[in-house]
Image 1 (cartoon, helix red, strand yellow):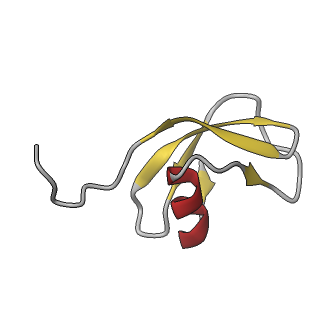
Image 2 (tube, rainbow, N blue to C red):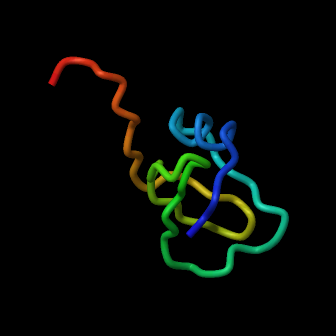
Amino acid sequence: MLHLTEQEAVDLGHGKRLTTPDEAPTEDPLAAVAPDGRLVGLVGFRGRTGTSIVNFPADEGGAR
């Protein structure tokens, strides 16, 4: 599991890449979780760069 900062959660939701200070601990996708516990998406890593495999947008009360 990858614990995100609030800004990282916003950035990932907009398709931006993440950079980690160290190599990713696994080649498998990681669940990216916002500070409030919301699942933001699944992230795959190559070296220190993480990209979104799938995002789960926050429910903002829009039409269903």
